[in-house]
Image 1 (tube, rainbow, N blue to C red):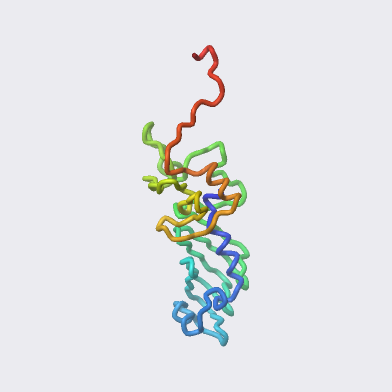
Image 2 (image 1 turned 135 degrees about the horizontal axis):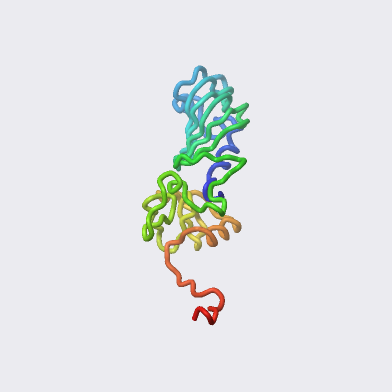
Length: 206
Protein backbone atom coordinates (compact mmCIF):
# COMPACT_ATOMS: atom_id res chain seq x y z
CA UNK A 1 0.00 0.00 0.00
CA UNK A 2 2.82 2.39 0.75
CA UNK A 3 4.12 1.99 -2.77
CA UNK A 4 0.67 2.49 -4.20
CA UNK A 5 -0.26 5.60 -2.21
CA UNK A 6 3.03 7.54 -2.37
CA UNK A 7 2.58 11.13 -3.46
CA UNK A 8 -1.13 11.44 -2.63
CA UNK A 9 -1.56 12.85 0.87
CA UNK A 10 1.18 15.46 0.45
CA UNK A 11 -0.87 17.20 -2.25
CA UNK A 12 -4.32 16.92 -0.68
CA UNK A 13 -3.08 18.30 2.61
CA UNK A 14 -2.24 21.68 1.05
CA UNK A 15 -5.41 22.58 -0.73
CA UNK A 16 -6.97 24.40 2.24
CA UNK A 17 -4.68 27.36 1.51
CA UNK A 18 -5.47 30.12 -0.94
CA UNK A 19 -4.09 29.40 -4.39
CA UNK A 20 -2.16 32.67 -4.22
CA UNK A 21 -0.33 31.38 -1.14
CA UNK A 22 0.48 28.04 -2.74
CA UNK A 23 1.79 29.40 -6.00
CA UNK A 24 3.13 32.73 -4.81
CA UNK A 25 1.93 34.41 -7.99
CA UNK A 26 0.10 37.66 -8.65
CA UNK A 27 -3.48 38.08 -9.78
CA UNK A 28 -2.69 38.48 -13.47
CA UNK A 29 -0.67 35.27 -13.50
CA UNK A 30 -3.36 33.38 -11.62
CA UNK A 31 -5.99 34.52 -14.11
CA UNK A 32 -3.99 32.90 -16.90
CA UNK A 33 -3.74 29.64 -14.96
CA UNK A 34 -7.50 29.56 -14.34
CA UNK A 35 -9.00 28.27 -17.58
CA UNK A 36 -12.70 29.13 -17.37
CA UNK A 37 -13.16 31.02 -14.10
CA UNK A 38 -16.47 32.83 -13.78
CA UNK A 39 -14.99 35.62 -11.68
CA UNK A 40 -11.70 36.73 -10.12
CA UNK A 41 -12.29 38.46 -6.79
CA UNK A 42 -10.19 41.17 -5.17
CA UNK A 43 -7.13 39.66 -3.53
CA UNK A 44 -6.76 36.82 -6.02
CA UNK A 45 -9.60 34.56 -4.92
CA UNK A 46 -11.06 32.69 -7.90
CA UNK A 47 -14.74 31.74 -8.24
CA UNK A 48 -16.53 29.24 -10.47
CA UNK A 49 -15.13 26.41 -12.58
CA UNK A 50 -11.52 26.39 -13.62
CA UNK A 51 -8.15 24.69 -13.79
CA UNK A 52 -5.08 25.16 -11.62
CA UNK A 53 -1.60 23.66 -11.83
CA UNK A 54 0.70 23.28 -8.81
CA UNK A 55 4.50 23.65 -9.04
CA UNK A 56 4.64 19.85 -8.60
CA UNK A 57 2.68 19.47 -11.90
CA UNK A 58 -0.38 18.18 -10.05
CA UNK A 59 -3.46 19.69 -11.72
CA UNK A 60 -6.88 20.55 -10.34
CA UNK A 61 -10.02 20.82 -12.45
CA UNK A 62 -13.37 21.76 -10.94
CA UNK A 63 -15.24 24.24 -8.77
CA UNK A 64 -13.58 27.03 -6.79
CA UNK A 65 -14.73 29.55 -4.23
CA UNK A 66 -12.71 32.45 -2.78
CA UNK A 67 -9.48 30.98 -4.11
CA UNK A 68 -10.07 27.51 -2.65
CA UNK A 69 -11.41 24.22 -3.97
CA UNK A 70 -15.13 24.18 -3.24
CA UNK A 71 -17.71 21.86 -4.81
CA UNK A 72 -16.87 19.03 -7.22
CA UNK A 73 -13.30 18.76 -8.47
CA UNK A 74 -10.52 16.38 -9.44
CA UNK A 75 -6.79 16.35 -8.69
CA UNK A 76 -4.72 14.81 -11.49
CA UNK A 77 -1.28 13.64 -10.35
CA UNK A 78 1.84 13.47 -12.57
CA UNK A 79 1.99 9.67 -12.28
CA UNK A 80 -1.41 9.31 -13.97
CA UNK A 81 -3.52 8.75 -10.86
CA UNK A 82 -6.41 11.01 -9.83
CA UNK A 83 -8.58 11.97 -6.86
CA UNK A 84 -12.25 12.82 -7.49
CA UNK A 85 -13.72 14.62 -4.50
CA UNK A 86 -16.33 16.91 -3.01
CA UNK A 87 -14.58 19.93 -1.50
CA UNK A 88 -15.62 22.42 1.16
CA UNK A 89 -13.45 25.52 1.64
CA UNK A 90 -10.36 23.69 0.41
CA UNK A 91 -10.94 20.49 2.40
CA UNK A 92 -11.86 17.17 0.79
CA UNK A 93 -15.10 16.00 2.41
CA UNK A 94 -15.32 12.72 0.51
CA UNK A 95 -13.66 11.29 -2.55
CA UNK A 96 -12.24 8.37 -4.49
CA UNK A 97 -8.60 7.78 -5.43
CA UNK A 98 -7.91 5.93 -8.70
CA UNK A 99 -4.46 4.64 -9.56
CA UNK A 100 -2.91 5.20 -12.98
CA UNK A 101 -3.76 1.65 -14.08
CA UNK A 102 -7.45 2.07 -13.24
CA UNK A 103 -7.48 0.36 -9.83
CA UNK A 104 -9.78 2.26 -7.47
CA UNK A 105 -8.79 2.44 -3.80
CA UNK A 106 -11.40 1.25 -1.31
CA UNK A 107 -10.96 2.23 2.32
CA UNK A 108 -13.00 -0.76 3.48
CA UNK A 109 -12.81 -4.34 2.18
CA UNK A 110 -9.53 -3.62 0.39
CA UNK A 111 -8.45 -6.88 -1.22
CA UNK A 112 -5.63 -5.88 -3.56
CA UNK A 113 -2.19 -7.23 -2.60
CA UNK A 114 -3.50 -8.45 0.76
CA UNK A 115 -1.05 -11.33 1.24
CA UNK A 116 -3.45 -14.00 -0.01
CA UNK A 117 -3.72 -12.85 -3.62
CA UNK A 118 -0.31 -11.63 -4.80
CA UNK A 119 -1.29 -10.85 -8.38
CA UNK A 120 -0.58 -7.41 -9.83
CA UNK A 121 -3.63 -5.48 -10.98
CA UNK A 122 -2.68 -5.95 -14.64
CA UNK A 123 -2.55 -9.73 -13.98
CA UNK A 124 -6.02 -9.58 -12.41
CA UNK A 125 -7.31 -7.78 -15.51
CA UNK A 126 -5.38 -9.66 -18.20
CA UNK A 127 -4.54 -13.02 -16.63
CA UNK A 128 -1.30 -14.65 -15.51
CA UNK A 129 1.54 -15.17 -17.96
CA UNK A 130 3.04 -18.65 -18.48
CA UNK A 131 6.08 -19.92 -16.58
CA UNK A 132 9.26 -18.12 -17.56
CA UNK A 133 7.39 -14.92 -18.45
CA UNK A 134 6.08 -14.02 -14.99
CA UNK A 135 5.64 -10.32 -14.29
CA UNK A 136 8.15 -8.60 -12.01
CA UNK A 137 6.02 -5.46 -11.64
CA UNK A 138 2.54 -4.20 -12.43
CA UNK A 139 4.08 -2.46 -15.46
CA UNK A 140 4.92 -4.49 -18.57
CA UNK A 141 7.76 -4.44 -19.40
CA UNK A 142 9.34 -3.49 -16.05
CA UNK A 143 11.50 -0.39 -15.87
CA UNK A 144 15.28 -0.68 -16.00
CA UNK A 145 16.59 0.36 -12.59
CA UNK A 146 19.77 2.48 -12.48
CA UNK A 147 22.77 0.70 -10.99
CA UNK A 148 22.80 0.82 -7.20
CA UNK A 149 19.19 2.06 -6.95
CA UNK A 150 15.74 0.73 -6.04
CA UNK A 151 12.37 1.11 -7.77
CA UNK A 152 10.11 2.43 -4.99
CA UNK A 153 6.88 2.72 -6.97
CA UNK A 154 6.85 6.41 -7.83
CA UNK A 155 10.51 6.71 -8.79
CA UNK A 156 14.05 5.47 -8.14
CA UNK A 157 15.74 5.56 -4.74
CA UNK A 158 19.50 5.98 -4.27
CA UNK A 159 20.42 4.51 -0.85
CA UNK A 160 23.74 6.37 -0.79
CA UNK A 161 22.20 9.84 -1.12
CA UNK A 162 18.77 8.80 0.30
CA UNK A 163 17.09 10.76 -2.49
CA UNK A 164 14.02 9.65 -4.46
CA UNK A 165 13.73 10.92 -8.05
CA UNK A 166 10.84 10.32 -10.43
CA UNK A 167 11.20 8.19 -13.55
CA UNK A 168 12.38 11.27 -15.46
CA UNK A 169 15.14 11.84 -12.89
CA UNK A 170 13.43 14.86 -11.29
CA UNK A 171 13.84 15.26 -7.52
CA UNK A 172 10.86 14.08 -5.46
CA UNK A 173 11.96 13.89 -1.82
CA UNK A 174 14.54 12.85 0.74
CA UNK A 175 13.68 9.52 2.35
CA UNK A 176 13.39 9.35 6.14
CA UNK A 177 14.56 6.36 8.18
CA UNK A 178 11.23 4.53 7.92
CA UNK A 179 11.02 4.84 4.13
CA UNK A 180 14.68 3.91 3.72
CA UNK A 181 14.13 0.72 5.73
CA UNK A 182 10.92 -0.14 3.85
CA UNK A 183 12.50 0.38 0.42
CA UNK A 184 15.58 -1.72 1.24
CA UNK A 185 13.39 -4.51 2.63
CA UNK A 186 10.60 -4.70 0.05
CA UNK A 187 11.42 -2.93 -3.23
CA UNK A 188 12.98 -4.24 -6.42
CA UNK A 189 16.66 -3.37 -6.75
CA UNK A 190 18.91 -2.82 -9.74
CA UNK A 191 21.32 -5.66 -9.05
CA UNK A 192 21.30 -9.39 -8.34
CA UNK A 193 22.41 -11.04 -5.12
CA UNK A 194 23.17 -14.61 -4.15
CA UNK A 195 20.84 -15.20 -1.23
CA UNK A 196 22.17 -18.61 -0.20
CA UNK A 197 20.25 -21.28 1.68
CA UNK A 198 18.12 -20.55 4.71
CA UNK A 199 18.38 -23.23 7.39
CA UNK A 200 19.79 -26.70 7.11
CA UNK A 201 18.79 -29.21 4.44
CA UNK A 202 17.10 -32.27 6.00
CA UNK A 203 19.06 -35.50 5.62
CA UNK A 204 16.11 -37.08 3.82
CA UNK A 205 16.37 -34.42 1.08
CA UNK A 206 20.12 -34.68 0.65
